[in-house]
Length: 378
Image (cartoon, rainbow, N blue to C red; front, side, top):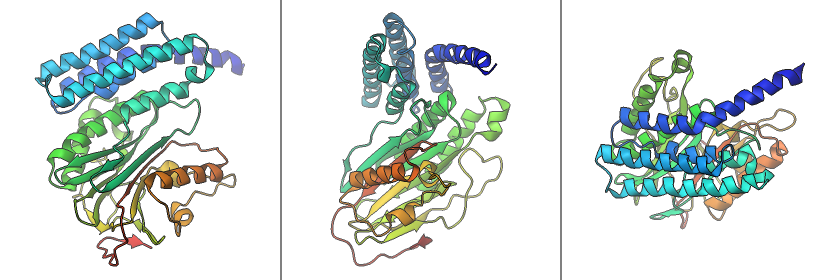
């Protein structure tokens, strides 16, 4: 009886997956037209040929790739940005991902079980939506990691981004409610709004409000239940140039950690709790920026709740404060390697949620003074 019900569900899932490439392109066009020209739908266009690759013929995958590239180019002409360097970069990204999709299509058709799995497609699409940040910006070393929880999981809603701006290096880590296409669309909205606002807004509070407005616009296009249930927890951070400080706006997200060169660990708790992004209709109040020390030799760790809510076989949550306190790491890459390995040991490779990690280190000798102006749990 269970098998009889499973077959229709599998067929229905396959039919949905088969129309996803077209939905991604069409959705990207509507998103780009409905939002200011500074926003971009290129992550959706890049993901469409990757989704087509395991389900369709090489010709159809090629047509989807050509359609995505044509949509991207057409919108750049429509917005009057076709000759600008960011627009050229976006078109090259879509072209590169389309070629990658054709390669994946060929491997899948030859029977490669590994590349045919949903995880490979999901991770490839995730990389298109979440490109890795530069390993170094100024005097800061940066590392990022996205760890999918399950081999057959759809694309999740965890996100991160790093932007070098006139106001310093700005970062965001967030977690969109939901999975699949809806989550990818929300991630694209948040990242597009962040990249633009990070360059233009002089304050971190202004960046948060731009993200709020972008999600509210997206909410008007969702069905009625999603309007009330959709939200994004987010942590925004700003590291000014030449100053050993970090500014933080926390919108309902797990607090970041500062790991100092001597092994001391600080938890940067927000001075006032705040609702996640996208819940402005429930309650509104001014965003508050908190500030803390980020001296030479320290590393800032931002993460999603896939880390803090990872459980062992007894249901005990992973506590990053307890597990990382007193430990010293050469750099951000080594820190993330150690965290991922530690979570795998804690859960016995049984994590049930995706995990996004972003680490930023300020190399150098440890500064003697660590003045604090935000609530810090030592």
